[in-house]
Length: 112
Length: 117
Image (cartoon, rainbow over the protein chains, first blue to last red):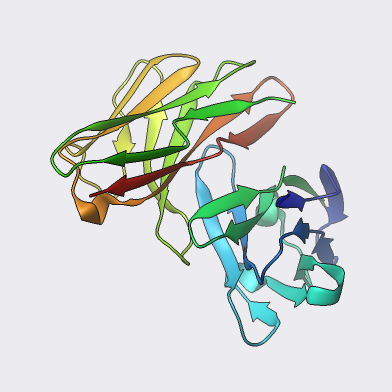
């Protein structure tokens, strides 16, 4: 069955420290992969996406993600976290071109 | 955990008819729900924010007379695609915002695949 797992419900990082949010998926074919962010009171915003090609994808706000087929992972990274990055982050898999399956989300807390 | 039920999961309709999609929060009250649309191989596009008891807030470029949103209760929001045309064929997904004193989280429905013939 198709699924997306975000193992960490919440993560706390100090401002200026590096960040990695984990995402694992289960899907039979080559997936389309997305990372979205939801800031408080707002809808989703796309950070980045992977369809094919270079497995290291650059996104907005200084985020990047790496697709590792052997590990069925698509982890999100940022070298230096800012307080404004505190939000909830969702990994998603595009399955079959139409349907999107979301992970449960990871809440990021940033401490001063 | 909290569950959001979206119905139907798949619908096929004739051009010119209207289709209603329901989004229910099953075990929490959601004052805010979001409706998204996704075309194949693209990311989600926010269509509108639905607030219980008030008019929905539509994103730029989304026709509010075509995509009617009603959020009449704290557990139900509906999206009605009026006079559907083949270009409305898409994947529609809702999300409901859970909020209490300590936490805020977004939960997603499973989506509706609309095909207009």
